[in-house]
Image 1: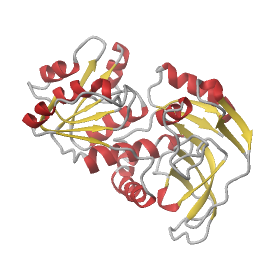
Image 2 (image 1 turned 180 degrees about the horizontal axis):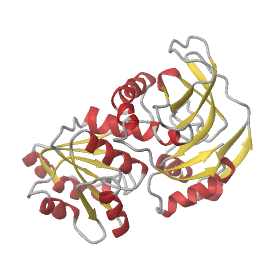
Image 3 (image 1 turned 180 degrees about the vertical axis):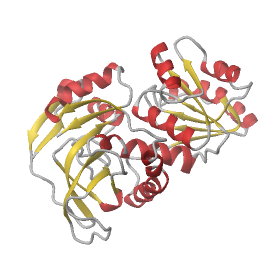
Image 4 (image 1 turned 60 degrees about the horizontal axis):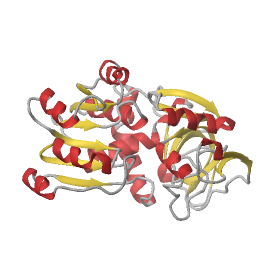
Length: 327
């Protein structure tokens, strides 16, 4: 089968198409003929040498796919059949024509979504739901601040938070993206972080109150501002380190606000945890997609052999929604 490999750490040019042996499904795994794979920042960070696969995971990048079930390893107990259209959450291996993945991490595609578009869903849906709802316990009527409005995480998080009844604030780096966040995605507040201090702007537009929950993909660069932007009893959930891993934390400010900082990662979690998250996504998120309250957003698709071009497009920051590789 064809698969994408990272031949050395660097720019998009280090991605290479290779012919490799197809995977064999192990105990409890299903084999999927991949139709499309989602591109995520984790793939870019892996390409750059900053986010290696967890022990035992494939070196092939790619954390989510859509496709059709092609076979089963021993001991699969979930009620799947060969040919079922599914999505899967992976620890790696998605940029390939086939993947083998634990059955717990596989879901049937939600009603009304085509098999290519479905590749945009599993990683972001699992990341956003597990962090906003399961970890931060976001409640209807609370204010959530979401950084990176128009990326894959941002577009899903804005829509999901709105569907759960939250007031949504978000940040973006251009006037066009600010407009998209409000007019197209439904954000209540959108802040251009290149022109405004986002904690001050948030309070000004939110009746003097900060955010009850912040979903942050930036990390150290935003740590002080995020703590400043929290409301009393606020929860800062850090899920990315685009702005670095080490920052200075004002514990006094955190104490005064009785607030919390939590850092999570989805990729290294054990299968049982990922399975529980995927079950929750099926029960709570898939119906929101089926009834149209959450719309999968695909910015552009590329053939597998143009993976480098897909990464260049991702690096440009011009996209709104997900970038997909199609087999």
